[in-house]
Length: 326
Image (cartoon, rainbow, N blue to C red; front, side, top):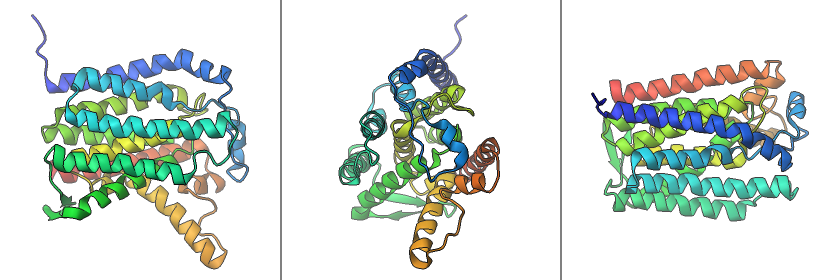
C-alpha cells in the first residue's frame, strides 16, 4: 500500500535530502577546495586563536547553495515564490563568490568593493520587494510583531525591503566568524520559518526553508570545530539573502528582527563599537562582532558557538510562538 504524500513528508524529504547531499558533497569538495589553494586569510587583529585557521579552505557556500536550489525545485516546484526566493539567494551567492575570489584567489584584501556590491544587493532587494508586493499580489502592508495589526507602507515598502536585505545579509556575514556559528544559527532560523510558511499555506516556501536548514546541517558535518572548510561570503551572503526572502515572501518582514535576533545583536555590537570608538577613542567590547568579545575574554570557541546557537534557537522559538502559537 503506497504511503500517502503529505506536506509534512515533503518537508521531511526536502530537509533530509539537502542534509545528505551537502554532507556527501563535502567529502570530495573540501579536499578539492584545498587543492585549488582557496585558503582563508585570517586577519591579524582578530582573536589569536583564529590564526590557526589560516589556509582552511573557504568558499564552502559552493557546496550547499546549488543543493538548496536543486532540492527546492525538486520538492517545491518552480513557481513564482520559489523563483524570487532563489533569485535573491543565488544572486547573493554570486556576489559572495566574487568577493571571495578577489580576496582569496587574487589576494586583494578589500575583495569586491562596496560601490559594486551594494548596488547589486539593492537591485536584488528591489526585485524581491517589487515581486512580492505587485507580481505576487502580497501588497505593501507590514505586520507589527505581537500587536496583531498591520501598517500600510505604500511607496515606503520597497525601501524597507532594501534595508531588510542589506541588513540581514551583512549581519549573517558578521555572524560567520567562528566554526559552525552561522550554519547552526541559520538552521534554527529557517526551521522556524519553515513552520511559519506551512501554517500560512505557503508550501513552496516551507520546502525552501527546510532545504536551507538541511543544507546548513549537512555543511556543519565539515564546518564544526575544528572546521575543515569555511562557508566564506559565498555562503554567508546567500544564507542572509535566503532569510530576507523568507521574511518578505511570508509577509513577516519585521518578525525577522525577532526570529533573527542573534544577527541583530551581532550587527549592533559592531555599530556600537565603531560609533563609540570614533566618539571617545575607547571600546565598549574587547572586540566585535560580539562573539569575538567572548573569545578574547577567555571563552573557548566551542563554548561561544554553543551559547550563540542557544540564543538563536530561543529567538526563533519566541518568533514562532508569536506567529503561530499565539
